[in-house]
Image (cartoon, rainbow over all chains, first blue to last red; front, side, top):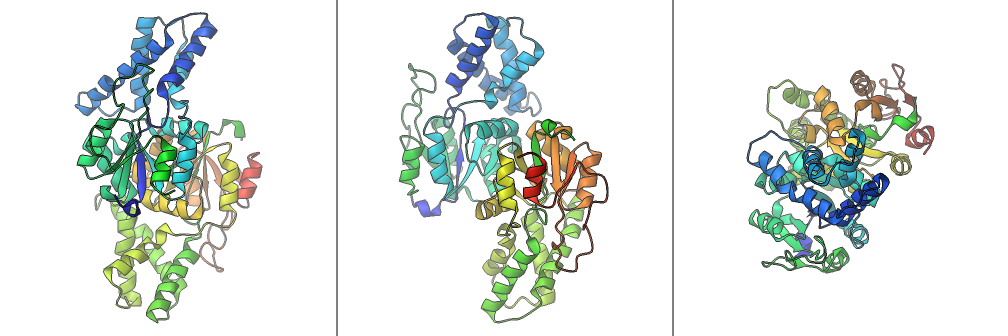
Length: 237
Length: 237
């Protein structure tokens, strides 16, 4: 790949840029502590996240109209609380907990890597997270995005092709000049089919120490990088 | 106004953040010099900009489907060139000239003011400029936006109310917690009617030294500031 052709980098966010599992577990653990209850908070985070794909599938398959991820997360949270017990949480407390997804911590290499990349490339999110979630997360974590794109501005969740192609159109760029960065093979395979360049950055503890998926690249991507600092180096930044 | 209620600032861009007239005149002057032609380049910039409102009106009034501002600008440019002479410009040269709107210079106070404001507030564009234009302009000028919103993600140009309200929805905020910043009374009057807070920042040379409009506030806004540094100070940043 000639890095000189690349004008912008688009990023998957959950798992690729931020450690959603540890961050959500931290938030629910804090909530549990304040309420004096104990539970397997990693399992709580996993269960909440397990409902993510099914909740979007209803939109992707046209069984419900567009709904932003904050809304889907809240519905999923109510289901998880019905399993784990809602500990008498008020509606405000549930809403605060739902916005834990706005307060995810970046992987340690994310900010320094993105900061280097930002000097040479337009950096945009191509995430299923809604705009407010991505903006608040970036503000808190210091992620230097040039644009918040992806599902909400495209009104299509990944894996819809529209999510990728409308993002490219917003950037005013051909997919061949955009490098899609993700820790997930499925995301990159779909982007590659649509003409995007691809960079795989493994996040082997996204799902905890026993992770068995997405440990390595499953096809030939343009770049495979250890982390975002390595990605910046490989792009000559 | 209690500044503590404000969570985000949304900005008109052309005229308010960037000096479009001097920037466009600079670009067409450079082009003219390279082609060995002389003309009144300020008048060229004014004429190009004069076609801006009529070009959007066709979309706003439903006489044509959504078209991003890059496309409207290009159509207007062709009209202006038909008046001023196209100097044998190639299509690539015309396209480069059209993208002069991606290369507008910020007013001198804009970057230092926005940088101070950015430490305390979410900053978003609420402009008729399309996303690529706003992203490229920000990257070149160093404007620290947290989100590029406004017409294209809302699929409605100002003065449609949807442009303002969909922007607030993207931010996940009530209009009463958003401060709309503009150098134009019309923009602020519309935002105020929709429940936004308002800040007027005069740009008395936006249209050159003989400017006769928008020299001062035409109604009671929450804030009237001299420039963005004064705005930051008035908001306690």
